[in-house]
Length: 384
Image (cartoon, rainbow, N blue to C red):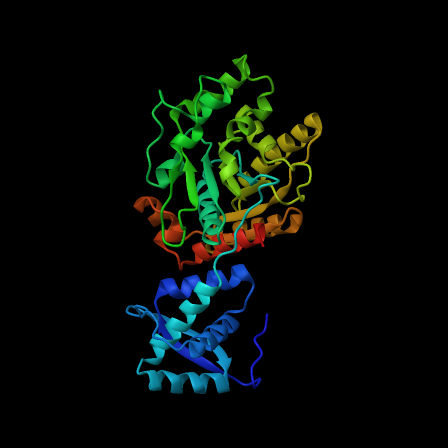
């Protein structure tokens, strides 16, 4: 989208903006499909049309920000700021705030088809799938989607990383609902994950230590007629409140993984890439070996049940180019596959480890970090 201006000439605008305002502008512009320079131009035009005083924006602790706006508009805006007796930095911050308020996050609703269902899975542990699941979910929540994160790994790393305890073993749990042990409402144990920019849209279904028993119970329970559909049935009521359900899978190839794969199959009337599996890997041979086994499991399940499960892509995680030929050649191997694509290459940096230590989502702890930006990039590829 291009803003019409009296002249094609543009001046570079350099100022200092609060990090949160700058971040909000970047995310909102990408979400509604407007270039940042056009968003700022629209905001300045709206600011100049506003006669009354506007609420001041706290511009302390601002950091550098630059863009380009039409030259004639820029000169008039500077003059208006002087005439109104406010600093140019404050006027620009008010202009951006006006644009944000007039361009709210779109309503993300897919009631007819239910939520989009995505699993992050790899039988190999230590590839960072839990951190990626949390990061992608938070990035989707930032753009207005209602997201449920399901901690489906009995080790419960996702629950712990977000600063919460496992569900007590005698209480309601996903395992109990899946195998029909009593009447339970999973919505009663949902935890809202708060954080700057998340807007109350991100929720966690926490782990319970009885998850270690799930595979055995799926095999022996008489109440589960079709074990592959157990997760789908358990989440049926809960998922109505969400646009995305992100499942952090166990590092195994057992029955629990079968239920997760079946859950993210392509439904009738869904586009092929609406739901499916994202596979976190590392640039090393053991990840390639693990993927071959997971690929066999996916293909076998699809053949046996006559279903389609979309491979949404790989994420090459914890990448460190300093390790030389081994990791670089392994990365080339992942990229050469072509389909599914490599969604992102995420470097091994301290920000995610710090977020885990602080028990915070990465996008809350280090919202401007390279890793956080990559989570947003992945989210945009999933939900353009």
